[in-house]
Structures are given as structure tokens and as C-alpha cells.
Length: 273
Image 1: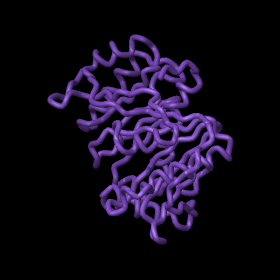
Image 2: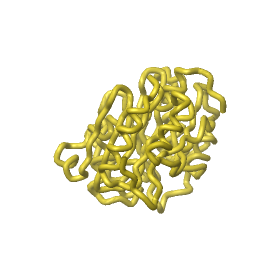
Image 3: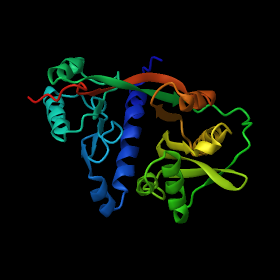
Image 4: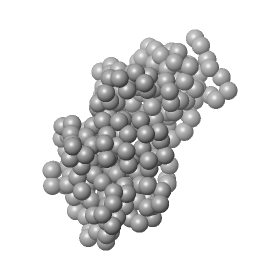
């Protein structure tokens, strides 16, 4: 997809960066220490380090070169910052619409290579066709935030303490969280963050024994319906690959905007400079 609207190019990255920052900053302080989590923001670039989880999702920089062009010094400083953590799987997430053209050269100068891609998806505000899924979806109230968190942690097969991270944004302005129910029991979770005319869809998970029943399709449909009612013009999401989650989103009108590379160090070395 060729996106010519610069505002949309920026929003595709910024709404993800802003939602991730809020999700991380919403964690209780004592758990932030447990996770060894730090969150920083420089202009529109959001950076996180989680020293107990060596994964690109937890250790990354988002929003580079979008609102304002990157500089060579900025790329060098970010590389030093992430390499100093000794995390081997950090990511500088670089949109293909990031500026300036010299960005790829500067990344190479500091020894960073493409370590993978994220599929970035977008949908306009076209009305939904009739949804044929059967699972009931309910919006989560703040009093039930731990129900959302606990189900998410179980569905992702993560330690119970992760529940506090998954539900950290419940009740925050702009956020809506949902649970899908099968025979009266919650089986899947998902969230939506709205900023103006843009909505980010994420934190989707389904209990292993309940997959294949249309839970995520029901949650996608509900979030689109609610977003349209609130004036959303573009819905944004990302998946790790062209996987089941990606195909579920495409079924509801999402299209691949681009595949965004994650830049990190080669697996076999840690470069200092």
C-alpha cells in the first residue's frame, strides 16, 4: 500500500508509541522495579527497557523520523543506549516513511541490521458488514481490570504478575478494554486506544482451549463498531507476521500498510563504538 497522506504516515507510528507509553507508565511503581522497566520519551520517540525480558516488544524505540527527521547523532546515541543494557534483542522500529534518506546509512554505521519485521495494518471508517460471530462481548469496567489482566496473562501463557501490566491502562482516558464470553465465561481479551480520529487495536489474546471459536473476530468487530460511533476515521494495528491475528484483522477490512523493519544488533556480536 502506498500511503501519501503524511498525517496518516505519522499516525500509524505515533498512536502505537503513545499507547505503549501509557501502558508502561500505568504499571504500579513497585512492579516497575520488579520488571526493571524504564520508560523515556524524547520529543515524539518513545523508548522502553525491560531488563527481565530480552524481547523486542519490551526493549524498543518507536516513532523515529516521523514527526521530525532523525539525526545521525540521535541514531548513534540510541544505539549506545540500548547496547549498554546488554539486551541482545532490542529493536529500533523504523517506518519506511521515516526521514531522512540517510537513516539506513546511519543505522549501518552503528552495526545495526534488520532483525525482523512487524506487519502494520490500517482500516478506514467504512461500515462493517453484518457480523456473523456468536460470542458475547462486554466492555471492561475499572473494577474488573484484574479480570482482564489475569485472562490476558493466562492466554499469553505468561507469569501471573504480568496481569498487572496487561490491565495497566484500564480506565485511562482514551482506552477501552473488552472481554469475549463463551457460555458465560470470559475466554478472550482485547483493547482499543483512541486519539482523535485514530484508534489503535491491540492486547488481543484468547485462552488456548477457546481458540477457533471466533472470539477475536467478535472483539475486532465490537471495537470497530464502537470506534466508528466515536468518530474514528482510521483503525491501526500490528502483528508479528501474516499470522492468524493478521488474517482476522484483514477479514474486517484491514490492509497491510507496510512491513516495518526492527533494527538491532546481529545475534553473534555486541558492537561498541
